[in-house]
Picture 1 (tube, helix red, strand yellow):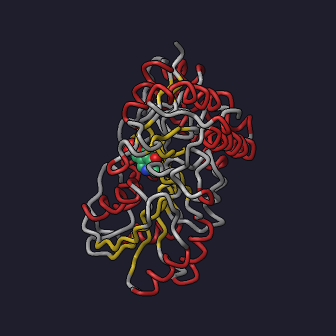
Picture 2 (cartoon, rainbow, N blue to C red):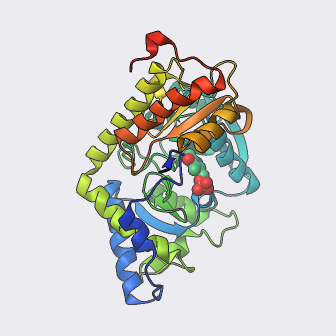
Picture 3 (tube, rainbow, N blue to C red):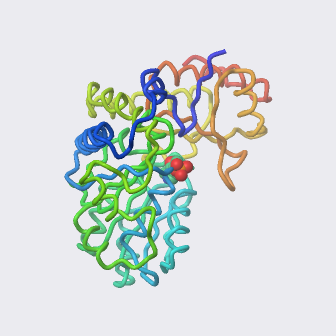
Length: 372
Ligand SMILES: *Cc1c(COP(=O)(O)O)cnc(C)c1O
């Protein structure tokens, strides 16, 4: 049975990406690697339409979240953490681990952050150095209205740092970094980029560089200053995940050939298939409709159904690998990942298999909703 891997990362990789990852090693301080990192970095910058500096680091997404913090902040700095879910909470925890004083603006899970509430929190304390925010909250299937939020932030604090976790959104949904005046934006190779895990991307703007000069949190592995100096010579400070760099090349070529506008449109179409399909099964989305993510759909487990068993049945008997709920959402929701190398029929197949699996778990698909 062909496995339909529908989790929010690692996402399936195209054959040519996998093949490229299997190439023989090269000297990571030689001319071939220098050529590759220069080209891939420039391509990524172009695909993300940003003029900001761009660094490829060897780390999972959490590593580059840490990079965003340790390169811009100092122990004791007051930071506003806008959290709409598990990954939002994690961003705050990292900052706290390095000595930042966190104020959390916690939003009810399933909803997006309200720009005016963020602005009000900033007005309440003029000493905040930075705002931490998640663009796409993978645990709840919510995409924050980041453009509106960033605008509201800038009206109150034109110079505050805005650090963004865009790990499950950049490269899959529109995120005009420069236009929205975001200072640090991070993502990971295994999400929308169709590449295996191991590379983290850090977009680092001019305001972030000013902060870097004064930031005193301890930093070593993730020091962007070191990344900048080495990139100038076509290298990384430490041994990079060379195999994944190989895989990145064909993945970026694919995105370039498709065109980012088309990539974004495809993600929207695929997400619509998921959302309409969920409705056709008589199920409900966990996220508010107005902020439903185009890269991941969180669905409420219907009353009387064992959510953990549903995910297990889908995996064992239907060849579909879904994600369950995290922390307090375990068993209460399941999540369909639809980012990266994905098309409509793969997500329609998830809906079709759910239709077949749900009755085994004691849920009858309503007949009025039976025909999708
Ligand atoms: C996946 C993800 C992370 C964590 O990335 P890792 O690669 O697992 O460290 C953080 N934030 C968001 C929004 C994510 O989707």
